[in-house]
Each structure stands twice: as C-alpha cells, then as structure tokens.
Length: 143
Image (tube, rainbow, N blue to C red):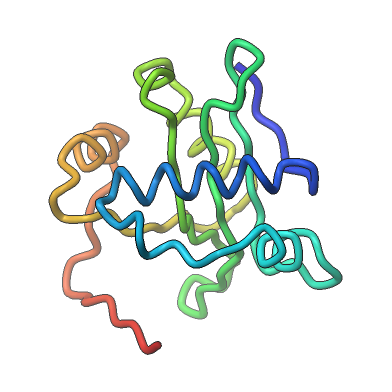
C-alpha cells in the first residue's frame, strides 16, 4: 500500500472515484463536477482542497479529499474530510485507516467529517477508531 498526494495527472481518476462514491451513496446523478473544476480547485493558483491517493497492487484503490479548517475555540487548524472512499475490492485491507491516520498526521487539530445516517459499515468503522458523532449540533447547508 502506498499513500501519496494527488497530482494534476490524477484528475481523471479522482473524478472517477468521486462518481464511484456517489454511486455507493445512492446519489450518482448529483455529481456535477468536471475535470476542469477539479484541476482548477485542487491544483490551480489557489487550491482550496487536497487529495490523498491510496494505491494497492499498483492500482488506485481509494482517496481522501480534504480541506483545512480552523477552530477558534481550540485555536488550531484542523481538517474537514469531505470524501473518503476505498474501492470495494480493496476494503478490509487497512486503506481507510491509513488515509485517516495520514490526515491526523497532517494536523495538530481535529479531523472532522459527516457520514450518512444509513451507512452502517462506515459508522461502525469510525466508531471502532474512537470517533463519534458531535452531539448537539445539526449540520446546515445554504446553496
């Protein structure tokens, strides 16, 4: 297994992974991102997010797409994990854990993310790490 920062050459594969994740999350028709969008926002003059690629058996096996956050209460930067996905044939090999551990290494703050309430395999995985839901908060979105 290898973890590495994505490069602009990975953009087509990143978009494919995003589409595979959306399919898994029962929202395949909601992906509007294009390769040009990803190239601009991940590798342009002012990148707003980053991608870690997990490889196994010389293949792209998964990814973590994240961006920096800052907690005023803690006074330190953190990471928001937007997407974590490991292709089905590579699951149960420690890739998801390795991606999360790398994100944890990249920050001295917290790593946060959201999980769909029906995604029991992911919930069980996160709870096995000692992670849990943030009580008392409701996530909002303004589009």
